Length: 193
Image (cartoon, rainbow, N blue to C red; front, side, top):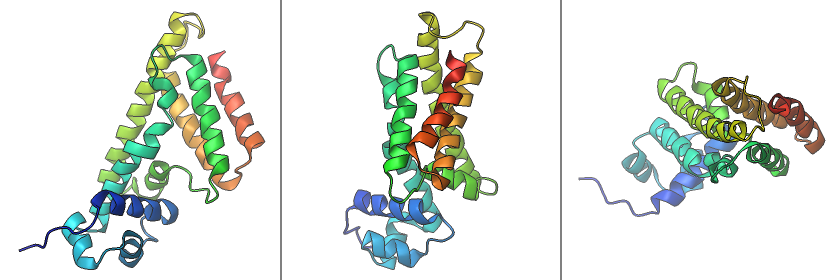
């Protein structure tokens, strides 16, 4: 009979998320996880089954918390082109202020594992679709008031804006400089004019 869980599962999951986010899946050992989570092997396997299952839960937790924050300006009623610009301004500030230059955990996971891990690929696709849907709604609002040209295919623009987020996050890993990242965003958002 399995022993009952005797730790705060959410806190342990948050700790695991931070380790995976900083080190990646492959470089993270179960010892690293147990130390960060403050639990023993039995508790780890009892609560999360295995390292891979824990990793997937950590990715989902990231999307529910940190990952969704980037789209908050788009969640406001009647969000439009100014909200889109705010998303990218916040993104640049977030990337520059992270002393560890971790980038996006979901993007890191996608680059490391999605080519051969179907579960990670599915989570990455879901995250991408949520981002595209959020941008699409804001683009529709902007287009309805004439802030964006009618000739734009808004689904394509929404997909492009998600890709721009990935590009900024990737660039920030090598050069986390406000001016540099802001210039990328400026050119990237010129499509909205």
